Length: 108
Image 1 (cartoon, rainbow, N blue to C red):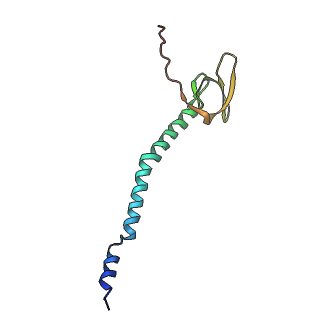
Image 2: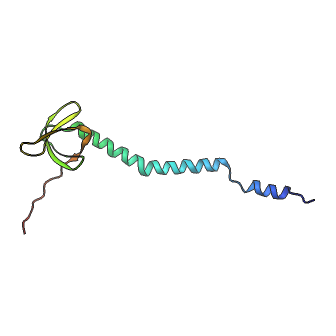
Image 3: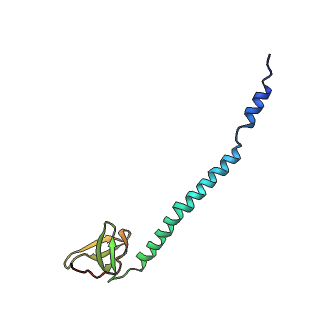
């Protein structure tokens, strides 16, 4: 009869340790956190600070891409003028950012 101990010893030696797998998973999560989660969190914090500092007269962009001017501030909403006679009430969380400086349009 053939001795199977060398075959079993070789098979057991080739399995990776569970500690190595755990370290690899931690490394992957760390890279994922630094590349994706951390920049999104910083961007959200900057937007939150911007929303807290907005006041009447500021020109903003509302989340679907609407340009407007804040005319009133409530607890959780803004009154935004989007045209001469058109005003809408939007949640503070729907503000995407400030409008950039207007560029001069040249006619051809």
